[in-house]
Length: 321
Image (cartoon, rainbow, N blue to C red; front, side):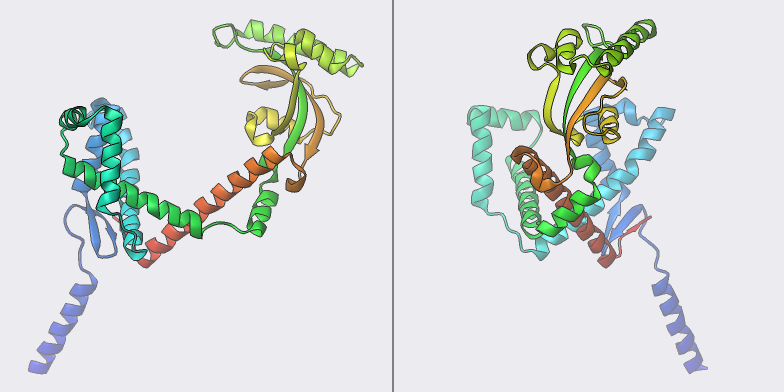
């Protein structure tokens, strides 16, 4: 009987351990640490100070919806904060008192001296020690970012692969355009009747250049782009990502030498002439090649950082309740 009771007790202990319940008010678990509702509420108070109390008023439908939207985002932010702290510790990132004091001294200088510095602390209801703790955290995060930048730099092959994968956003075009503005002098969109007149004028102008009129001369004479008087509608070499979506989409479907029918964008109606198209990174202008390469590097580093965080979440067995 005694052995039976001991065995049953052991079984109960195993079951109890396996079904251990989360602490009251815990909203997430990161490794052995818990995040509580009070932690979320503390962040929410800062949001209320910044955006206003009414936005998160639980007694209104708008407030309830805002709370529903913001709560998961705050939890995710706090989870990431725990992961950042772990990475800072794992990588043995340190911030010295000298570095912290240098930032404090810089802030004092910006504010105009010790007295104004102290006055600002009182205004924000903050002690100098609290400020130093915040500066320490900022410097730690900064050093962690620098570590990511150093260790997650993509290879030349990764850059080329990403370029080929997302070529549509990185294509270099050379084009000219004629604009018939869809806005008045105050920047407000024209009424539908006025827009119709602009479209009719754009269609008429399209037929003129299609029939052989010099595109750039027509642009200089008719385009409502303020720069047309000087550049005759020439846009030069540019990346597709720098133009509004409708403009870039139209270019992607055009052949070199082709003139488009009027294209509607937020700026009005454009007639576009495509002069050249470059889909080879090495054949782009130096400036565009540099911009594309840096944009791709930034994206790939960001992707690698995101992957690192996902890896950490799995290792820490992150749970959101």
